[in-house]
Each structure stands twice: as structure tokens, then as C-alpha cells.
Image 1: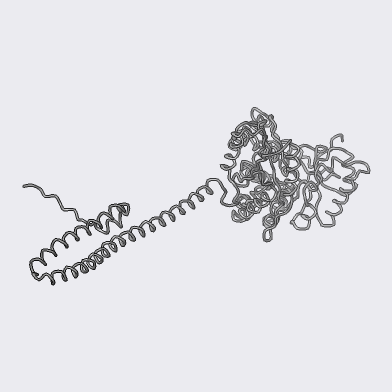
Image 2: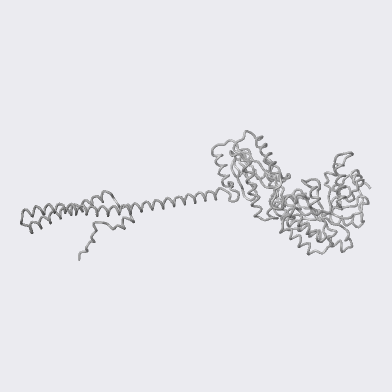
Length: 553
């Protein structure tokens, strides 16, 4: 049986046009209307004439009906055209509305895509906290300068000094507020022709695109470093703000992004090592020295784990009688191959790497256990001074570990001294005072080491719960007949006595220095004139005598 093909409708379904408006073609639609009108006209003329001839025989009536038929045809065709055109116009309107709706939807989608694109671009190239460009954006900018054949530019790597103290003492939320404040300062200081970016954490970078010579960079960096030297106040806390920066030049210090960044970072490290609050231009010799520092830092971890560290003890004496009244425990590292490594070389590396926390815990524990042994041997009167790093003092977590050690080791804490430096108090004096009060509550005495070499020592005498002031050896070394330092030392000793502080003079090396100190009523001292720091066995031999003779006596 032959399969019948389905008949196609003369007029397509309206919904088909609405769903697919592209099917609507003006020429085709006009043809459909014309065809419908043509068929209706043929049928009307043919059928109406045959009907009239069949039913009407009167000529007059026939002619009259023909006239009426013509008018009726006009009305019918007009109505038919109206229906056809109205139907097609409705279809066109629906199609146009659909197109307009689709166009609006497409426009909205495009706007959303643009917003998403901008958001992705921002997330990729800008720092969400400070709104500064990030490292990726900075690398892109530098690569563009290199590709354009830029003859010279400079990259400055910047680190905020002592920023970790803010996070450790007040939390990361306060740290974020501080970073926003720093970013705002950078925006004000940097010219629009240059480029500043946040590298991550408390590290920032500046790209100098236009300068005639390095003197221009020097002048700018002098001004920039100076502009950061002030106190940032947050609630009841005060933080001394400073920056350390390293400068690398293109193409002298690197011909690609990674090398330039690396050398700027190395230069910044040397700025920190040199005392912070400064900037340093990269030099080729830094690279070899930096590799050496990395090796020392790695070996320090091994030293901690394999008992290469030890404590040496420097006697503190009554400088009038020579009686040993106390001792300062000093950290020493005797490397099996390198030999003696100075604390000046490895302590800064330990602070940077975070190993200082383990070192502090080891020093405190070892010193307290030694004190406990002395007490058991009948030498409970002997004071022991232990250095506590500013890092540990300002870290809640690591300071709590020290407090746990103090709770576990039963010694007489009234003859125990913790020595601190001004660096810790510069970061957050309020936080430090609270911790020192907790130490004093169990009887520990607090000594301010290297007094007179920092920023605001005199204010610390009033605010910090101190018991002892240690005169820095730079003052002692400069004692001269009728010298200005003499007057300063006299004033400090007198002030300390009035405030009921003990004074310990460090670095006594000559008889003239000793005589001056005795004359001005400084009673306690330490230094090479009496003894350098010595191993425990040598110190205990001196301790057996109860006093130590001055060199030359």
C-alpha cells in the first residue's frame, strides 16, 4: 500500500514563527496573501456568475444583482484582506517582540559577562585587601617594559619592619587595617607615572619607570623611608612604623623579571640586616653572601636538633669588691666544621626563619635547670640573667610556652632576671607591659638591655615595669676625661638611682672605665676586664672562689 505524504498547511502554525522568527520572509508572506486573494477572486467570479445565470432569468434583475454582487465582492475582499493582513501583522509583532526580548536578554547576558570579566581581571591582577596591583600585574608591567625595549627602570622591594608583632599581639584583623593604612601612604607617595604593588603579606614593591640617574631614586627613597618613621596608633596601642627596602636596577641587576625580583629581595634583606629603617641598592657580592646565609639557616635547624648550641656564662660582679653576684647566660654555637659562629650572624637568621622561638625555649629551659642545680648546691643567692627575644615577647603563643616552662621548673625567681631590648616595645608597648607584669608577678626581675641606643628609652623608664637598666657598652667605650659621654652616664646613673633602678654597666674593659663607674656609684658591671663569657666548667671554677680578680691585679 502506497504511503501517503502528510499535507502541508497553507499557513504555517503561528507558534512556529514565534519560536523561530527567522522563518518569516517578507516576500513569501506577500505571496501568500496575494495567492489567497487571487483564489478567492476566481472562485467568487466563477461561482457567483453561474449561480445568477441559473436562478435569475430577468435581465434587469440580473444586472441589478451583478451590481450588488460587485459591491459585496468589494466588502468581502476587503474583510478578507483585513483578516489576512491582521493575522500576518500579529505574527510579525509576535516575532518582533520575541526578537526584542531575545535582544534584551542577550544584552543583559553580555553585561553580566562584562562584569564577570572585570571581576576576574580584578581578582587576577589586584590585591583584594589594599586594592593595589598584585605581583602578577607588576610582573606583566615589567615584561611590557622589557618587550618595549625600555633602557632603564628600577624595582624596589619593601618590607614593613616588625609587622609580625602587630599580628601576634592584636590579631590578623588589626594587621589588615594596618596594611590598608600602609597602602594608602604608598598611594600618596608614589607618582602616577610609577607603579606600586602589594607582593603579599607585608611586602610591597615599587616600579620606577622614568629616572635620569640613580640619584633621583636615592632622593626619593630618602624621602620615602623618612615618611614612614612615625607611630601608628590603634585603640590604646602604639606601633613604631618603619620600612626596609632593596633596590634592583634594570639591566645592571637582572635582565628578566625573576632575577630583578630576586636581587631586589636580597638587597632588602641586607637593609634589614643592617638595622632596618633604611634602603640598600643591590650589589653583586650580596648573592654569594645570601647563599651563605641560607646555608647557615639550614645548619641552625640541625644544630638545634643535635645539641650543637650551648650556654656560656659571663660573670656579673660587684665592681668594688670583685664578688661574683650574678651571671648572664649567653648563647653560643660551636659548629663542628665552621667552629665558633657569632650570635650576630645567626640570631637575625633565626628571627627571620622563626627558629628563634625554639632557641628561646631552649635557652630559658637550659638556664633555669642550671640555676636549679646551683640552688641545690647552696648557691641560691646567685642571680641569673636570661635574654628573651623581642619575637617571643610579642608572640602570645610562644610567650605562653615560656610561661609553661617557668611553671614546670621550680627555682627561686626572685634571683632570676629576664633581659629585653627596646625592639620589642617599639612594636607594641602595651602588649609588652602586660606580659612583663605577668613575669614580675612570680618574682622575676626585668632588665632593659642596651639602654640608651634605641628610640625612646626615657619614656620606658616611666611606663615599663623595669628593675634594672643595663648601660650599653658603646657608652662605656666612650668614657673619656671630660667627655660628653661622661656627663650622660652620670645623668643616667643618677636618674636610675632616684627611680630605684639597679644599674649594670656592660663592656667594662679598662681600669679608667672602672674607676669612673665606681666614682659615680655604679656598683654592678660585667666585661672583659673581669671575664669574657666562658663555659659552665670554667665559670664554676671562678664561682668556687666567690670573687673574680680584675685583669692585671
